[in-house]
Image (cartoon, rainbow over all chains, first blue to last red; front, side, top):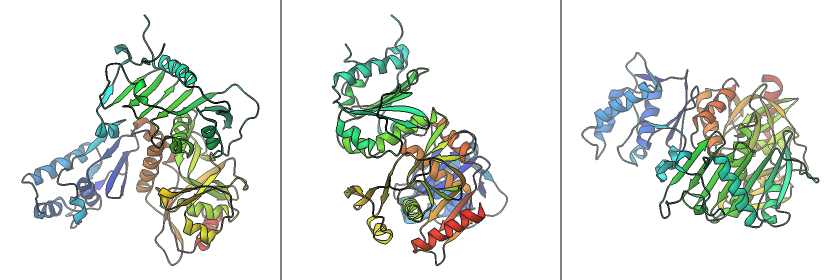
Length: 138
Length: 335
């Protein structure tokens, strides 16, 4: 099973959305509704197997869900959000609301303006390229 | 031809702002933590609207400002790079002279580091309300604060006998109600919603606003008897009241962070709790309100500042007056 790396991470879940902040670097992590529910289960000591069992039994579950779960957990470990811990782990619980956005879940690492990227394409314009210029300036 | 810098852009923005023709009386100066901040608008109505919110003194004689804030509304497409007409997007530029972000025709914001000028322009959809009722102000003050050894946090703060607690919760979490009941109960009071805190040294909270916000049902119980500045129909007619008849603490040391849990406990209880979830909420909520959009440096600064402050959960009963009494006893004897 796994535990939160509380030597480096603040974790909260609000309105079904996980918030993870690496307080040493300021980096912010998020994930989808399903990813948030899975992460919450992992932080509470649920076993990977019990999570996989629930996912497989959900209607519409894609064939590669176990690979997706493995990749998700690997990413959480790679980013030092989770640490492996000895023990069998307890049974997971996933509510129907956890599946409200479908079966995609990845660990999203946010640098500045990542939220904006979700709404609009971001263009980082180097001053060498001639912006900023105020177009209507005399 | 010399290279354009972000600060050059903002010099041009200043000229454009002046050409837009600000009304007479559409600016004022205030002192925040010893710094003179000039706030400029296009209309006197907007200037007066924002000035009414501040607890900080409004100057009657001109002084050379340490910083200038600009707030106005117009179609922001004029600020985006040439050749991007019709495109949706966000354009960002930054260098050692400033930071600039333009979102299609909706918003332009940025900072001129050289001249300490801060800009927030929005498309006039709900523009005036947004500006007058604090949101633009929180955004600009937040960016100004971090460059002046301060932070703007989304938190209430009250205390007694020279000791204080931050009360941190997301919107609707009960912090304002608890803080306002403390204000009415002769606690030391800093704020019910936003505080400035020192970035270094002893953690102290300072007020920015004199307006407090309270739900109608809580107002019926607490009976604040304060002038109503406005009623917000989008928030179930939440009342915004002028609390300036009370004495606000100019600064209050912060000894603990409290997370209110409106669980309807039989007896109010304050207990130590894991800091991670509380600080994640506080930092995330603060950053969102000042529109930092996941800036790692801002998150890191906030986390570092708050890491070593003890964190408690406050299980609230339905009796606002009992809650207040328990909080007073906690501050007096436990921290």
